[in-house]
Amino acid sequence: MSDPILRPDTAPAQLDDGERVRDVFRADRATYWRDHALMAAAAMAAGMAVLAALGNPHIWTGAVGGLAAIAIRAFYLSSEALQDEWRLTDSRLLGPGSAVIPLAEISVVRGLGSAVQVVTRAGDKYLVKYMADRRRAEARIAAAAGVSPA
Image 1 (tube, rainbow, N blue to C red):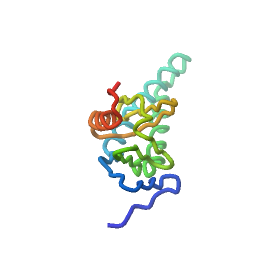
Image 2 (cartoon, one colour; image 1 turned 90 degrees about the vertical axis):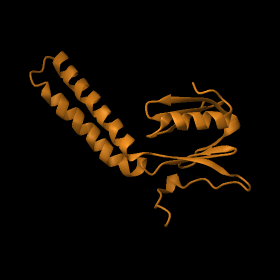
Image 3 (cartoon, one colour; image 1 turned 180 degrees about the vertical axis):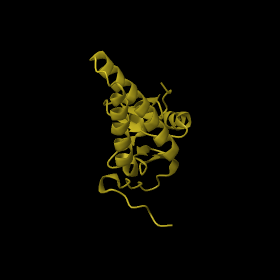
C-alpha cells in the first residue's frame, strides 16, 4: 500500500532515533459527518431564531441558510480534515504539519465533543479532532504525558 498524498503542511514529523510509536489517532469519517450534522442543526435553529427575533415572516430561510453554510463547510474541508493523523510516541505527540509536542510539556488533556484538547505548559492548544473513541484517545495521551484527564 502506498502512502497517502499529503498536503505540504501536513507531512508527518520524523521519528527520532530509537523513538517508538505507541498509538495512532486518525480522524474518523462517521464522526466527522455526525459532528457536522449536529452543527447544521444548531446553525439552522440559530438562523431561524435570529430571523424570528428580527420579525422576519420567513423564518424558514434561516434553516436553509444554516444548513447550506455548514454543508458547504463540511464538503469543502472533509478531504483535509479526514487526512489528519496524530502519532503518540514514547516521548512526543506528533500531529499534522509542524505539530510536535514533547510529552513532558503537556499540562492538560481534556475532551471537547469528539476532540481531545492538548494544552502545553506554555499555553499552546492543539485539537486531536473527530475521534471515534475520544475517551480512549484522551486516556492514552494523558497516561503517556503523566497527567490526569480534565
